[in-house]
Length: 161
Image 1 (cartoon, rainbow, N blue to C red):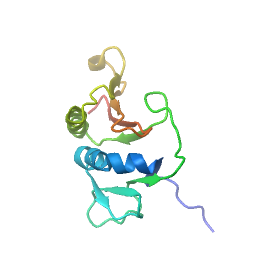
Image 2 (image 1 turned 180 degrees about the horizontal axis):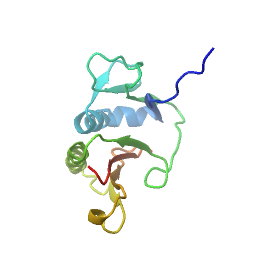
Image 3 (image 1 turned 135 degrees about the horizontal axis):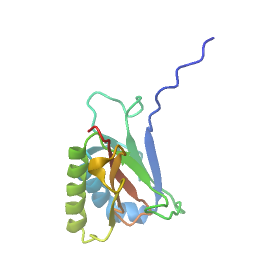
């Protein structure tokens, strides 16, 4: 029997545990962030939970390449240290335009909910982006609701882009 090719893997889903109270109080806000900012769509889930799938026509959430997020209610949810250099989930964008769109939507979302301090925009590169072959990482961390969840959105701009 030959070895399988191991070229690609795909992060299929991320599950977060939250209290029932957080999910009940902030369900609309959580849906607004993932669906309004990051192009997810809410889908049917178990009672008391919340599931959102990234929009891809004709792709089941369990298919290779699909991505979904689920919030699971627990009496004693996990705790975390969300933010830069701590617990977070990273999302890569295909283009700088997509990154900028998500950044703009996220800023509007944070303004809408009065939590504008919950974003940490960063960029990492060589000192002179124009004269280097080093890639340039555009990114931001966001804490979009009360749960101990931080999300980093990033785009890696290569020198030849």
